[in-house]
Image (cartoon, rainbow, N blue to C red; front, side, top):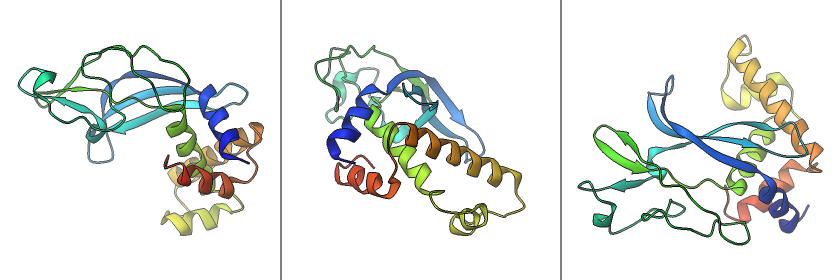
Length: 180
């Protein structure tokens, strides 16, 4: 597996912003939600980013913002080159409000999604359910732990359909690409 092969897979991942919400069960954190699908595999689902990745609108105007977070939507809603893609892609201007502060959702790339999928698959690659539970601190009697394990197993199978067989190697390459 090479950096170029992983980048090519990341480039075909389709990502769309689906809205702002509150993730419950984890301290009720505000998140930006995205839907992703990976052509050529069974991989699709929801990916979320916390509010710390967003661009805050200060005093009702983004022009007051002196510093943008890396990877965030452009403040003026104009075209922006997205990492890992050739050419330019229109980024629609969308605003989310949380506790009286408005935010632009951050851009999410196929490379970020691929990195997340590889990270999830790494947890179950060559491990049993019991090993998985021990390494992540789950109770082996927990139904939620089993559901999480099976979801990670499906992710591993989906990545293999994309010819990613060495998950550890892919993880290391993506880490070098600073995508993790």
